[in-house]
Length: 592
Image (cartoon, rainbow, N blue to C red; front, side, top):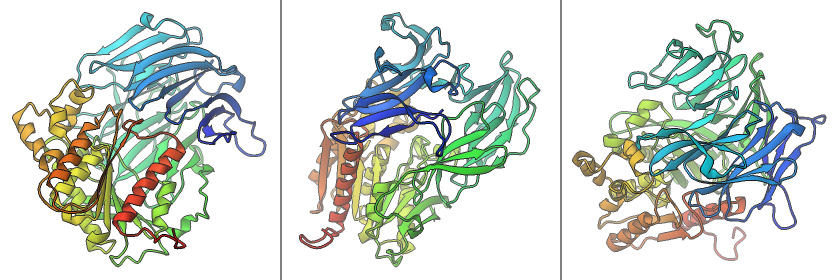
């Protein structure tokens, strides 16, 4: 079965009504029609966080008529306080309502007689796993696990076999668990297998490799799919498994999935455990989001769906590249680039927007964004610097950009900007930079370090008051964040963090044009942080360049929800960039 969330045109607007559908895993003229199992008119401020379909059977191969329930969670303020609803798939009648606070994971028990939800809840800095029987009072829930170390987080999901609720590093098939294990020695992870009834008897299926990181694993009845990272790019490799019940001592040679672009993103999708078809999501900076079915027996990929892009879009007009900048310590920093080949000159006169993040081992893989065409079709070059602190180049890439090595993140970004200038992709007068959240910290830090290098900067919900926030353990995420930034109650970390914290390093100097955004209900970066940063900039900077502070009064960390609202936000940011570059067409002109 496939479960697409799509928008349906209604009598008022096509952005406010969301429909959750199901149909057989088939396409073409003979494919059965979609079966609408949930429709809801969403107010503009509501964020639909997740939706799960509960079926009578363990996997999603159930008939449409056997679908029982839909569970979804919504947040109406952006403060990440979610209410989980469970409704009857056929009638839409409410079955249950559950109030929780994020971070959480929503999973479900496969026993049709119990019909329970398993939820992971953050409470007073600690993670708890609750078993909730649908329709019962929340006070009667059973606590399955309590993680008492507030430095640890917990992430659970249903195994592919739907037989166990497991940590996300564990998979299950037949009489074996498959475990993705990481240690200080095996930092890029190794893949082990062990019998369900004897978890100490482990077999190494894929050994640790210093140059390849095992990112994720997906199990099927007859196949194993391994998602890896090598040279800054994702890889997908499939292996045939012996029959269930047979000894599992090693893997046969795997076969890799081929991709059509030099830089791209590829991510797993929900799949049928019993199938030999791997479904994955694919896109690149010039290729719209696409869904492929890969036959693990034949090695053939079939495009099933590609997002429609209006306005005469032609992917052949765009060029995407991978370049490498050299950091101050000699490290090679990958940069992904896209531009409209018929518009750019590559002589240093083109405007360029450089994006960066570089924290939490998050991979900012090159992907498509339709609204970005508004810039590319104006002659912009768009680039992403895959700096240390992210996970693009493996675990060590992350380790070398956190704690007492955090400044590598900032110097890598500066080196990437200098590379783009030196190689005539842009000039200082045409270089704009962008980052959100921890990426906003990046923007704040490099603005203090090298304000001369940039023409304009966007710091979205920026984490800029690092020391003050990390000194307050009453803030929900602080204690777990000490693993990322350090504990400033210790002198060594306090001194180091204060040396780069943007609020603490604003000084009397020239700054470029700056846009800073915030969300009033943001529980991750309180609006006071960017407000404090802007106030200090206004007090100390010695230029007359633009400095804007935009606080969304009805949103949180992830800004407004709704497609049109997101587009309006992009339009605001792009207008700021065009204004800073003096590219706003004159009033009354054909372009305006």
